[in-house]
Image 1 (cartoon, rainbow, N blue to C red):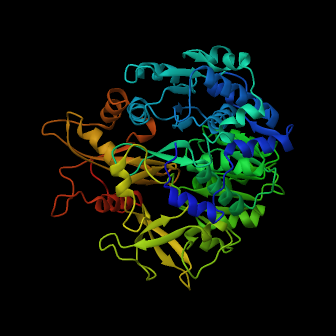
Image 2: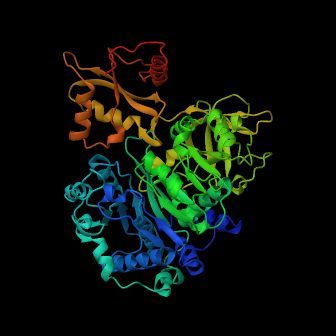
Image 3: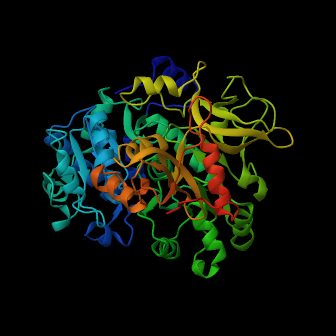
Amino acid sequence: MILVPEDKRREYTARGWWGERTVGEYFLDSVARHPERAAVVDAPNRSGILGDAAQRWSYAELLEQTARLVAVMRDQGLERDDIVVMQLPNCVEMHAVYLACAFTGVIVSPVPVQYRAHELKHVLDITRARVVITAARIGKYAAAEQWRELTGHAPGLRIWCIGAGEAGKGGDLALAEALLTAPPLGRGELLAPQREGSVSAHDVLTICWTSGTEASPKGVPRNHNEWLIVGTNVLEAAQLPLGAELVIPFPFVNMAGVSTSLAAWLLLEGTLHHHHPFDLAVFIEQLRSQPVQYTVAPPPVLERLLDQPQQLEGVDFDRLKRIGSGGGPLSDRMIAGFGQRYGVEVVNYFGSNEGAALASAPQDVPDPAQRARYFPRMGVPGHRWSLSNSEKIRTRLVDVDSGADVDTPGVAGELRFAGPTIFSQYFNAPDLTRNAFDEQGYYRTGDLFEIAGNSGQFYRFVGRHKDVVIRGGMNISAEEMENLLLSHPDIQEAAVVGKPDPQFGERVCAVVVPRPGQVVTLQDIVDYLKKDCGVAAYKLPESLVLSAGLPRNPVGKILKRALREELRRAGTGGAELRGVA
């Protein structure tokens, strides 16, 4: 399935930004050079999450597992452009799935482990997936049972469960057992679709999911080239050597995870240590016990570790020289502290599943205070940076009311992107696609920045034009949650905003006007959303404000800015919100 228009494919290829080699071909070259090198390693607490033993696969072993999985896919009738949904915590099998799909042209659509019936039904409606790859259990979540309940919604859906023994049961196919009997295919058989021209680097490899202002998650297709080019950006920003060992705790299902755990790992020919869901004690033990050269962590985790240096005793900072962070504001104190105390440089990332990405790396922004607040103003004539993608993308700031370009420092505008890192369309959603791009073909991020720096060389994030809550790096659509709240029989009006939080950045706060004579509690709302609507737990409100009426402008639009400001003041001891549950 090729979705990028031919003129763009020709342009990007002619400029050398995209190539003709697939993810599968890159992987086979790595196997040939380093067959015995460790490729992927499970988190040490896998048994508590999936119910079977942690695994460590060399490149040769990963190739064998991938080749057997391709054989199983063919035996089960999967073909090019079929879609497989994958709901798993970070684990070695995920690499085999991504690679098997890269060889066959089957499209993998990874979904967060937090998704439940409400979100999963939407994914099935959009993708019409034939197979889901999951596990009998993911922690306390009975994943296979959840998917079994959805087969009535998607007739013909087959459930494949990973895991050995009891862990692999509960689906239509115990994948571990099927792989034992499947004949591993040879290099020639794996590459046949590429050589015959039925699978190319322009084919869609993944459909990841993102939440914006719309009421439901949107599918973001990305091809091999679109992943490889963002992987290059990670390598350059983190200055990683070939063969580096990485611990990546970000979910292996979206831009932050796939760009590093698949794309950068593939180009590095390195070793990927999995970690997920996040467990601070396990994470630190991995940093201590493994020769790690790069990791990523959200800002609150790094702040905590800086304040509790005893937790980092035993970590080899002669090897671990860079840490990536993002998804929320970074402090100059944290960046300076890691540099002064450990000699570690923190890279500040901004990005989205759609491919809009900026990286504030020490080679471009050496001052910690500037790196915490600013991003290089990439894709603008007159400014040059070390990262190669800065010469390939184009960016502009646009006034959200007038549509005019913003060229004056200190004036907020929506940041927009164009170029070979940006997706081409939302999957099976033409109206959403039209709204996502402006008249010049730039992707509208919905994020507000301003020009900063003594020569206008930086962008500074100042807020969001789109209505989302970002909790621990996960985007939550306010509109989606408001629509669900309004379906509650005792709620007359509802608004959802992000409440500032030092650990997660934001938590979901519901501001509710009850129907006359009705009593609404936070527990009532949580039970309704969880049990009646099947909403993922990370989206559930964690605080409640009861109001006699929501603030609105003259045309009736809810004034979210006023609600957020009141929450901010209440959180700093300024104002008290009536009815906070």
